[in-house]
Length: 422
Image (cartoon, rainbow, N blue to C red; front, side, top):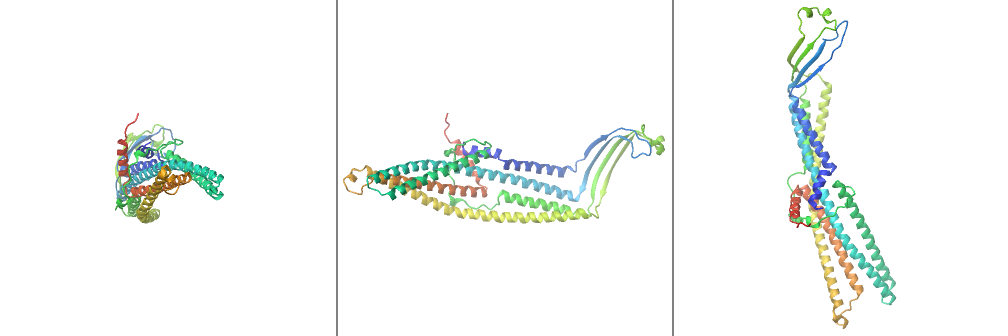
């Protein structure tokens, strides 16, 4: 599976993204709820029965009622708070998508790197076993001592242990990647050609914008501030509501006309009412306490957003500073591997040279060859490990800068450029 295909699947299957999408849908419903209070609601209710004695209510057969809010000082703030809440949910969705993309990309690259290291370790294990066999033969011939044999066997055992650890890493990464993709239990093979080169670490500059997560936290804080402001304006501010009602009345099975004689001579079975109701809250300790609670929540949310920003900026700056160190470390690993390859090539030339057999230089032995091959493979593993550390840091910084999506577009173009096989 290519890198972009893996990211696309993860964005559809990851529970974090699904939860964030559900939060956006909920926030959209909250916005509609805050605005729809101005739209009249209409309902009908009815029933029929008999009664005797003093009427407890007007004998209504059915009633059609409508009511709506016309004006409320606090409702404007509630609408603004709902809109800010929707913005916060949308930013949280973008952050969840970025986190999932980063997790998928890092897991994919780590798995690809671990697979390459595993191939190098298998070669290394083969050379270590050959070296142990050669040292055993030299010991039998009296050319080496037992300490050399023990060292060779210990080196082979260390390589076997490292190989087992690498296999565990591959298994864990495969399992995690399959869970991210929503394909549990499926072994996903990586495609190295679908991964575009990462940008030069020195070219990645810190963006001026906050991360989606920090922006979402500030949007949440603003939403709480709007809501708290509306709560504080509840008292002494008029609330205007509209109401209308039509009712159908029947007194046939009641004693209503006995207790209300005027209804007999001048009555109608239809009743209609419409009007506007104005309410001015004056004394409400419960609502005043709730307003203080909302204000405290708004202050806390803003402080939490500011704290998130500080932590984010410090972490991003730390990651960028570490890139230079990891890049230098990777360069050293590449040079070490190149040096080991040059040494191996020189030994192979001397082994195949006829001049060595004539005593023109130091005699190279199969033991020297295996040691050189071991050294080259070990440096290759070290180089790949350094590459993995640098890749993780770069992907993390790209995500924090909001540039991971642009890099994934390069990956998509790289995938489109791959030759089609049948």
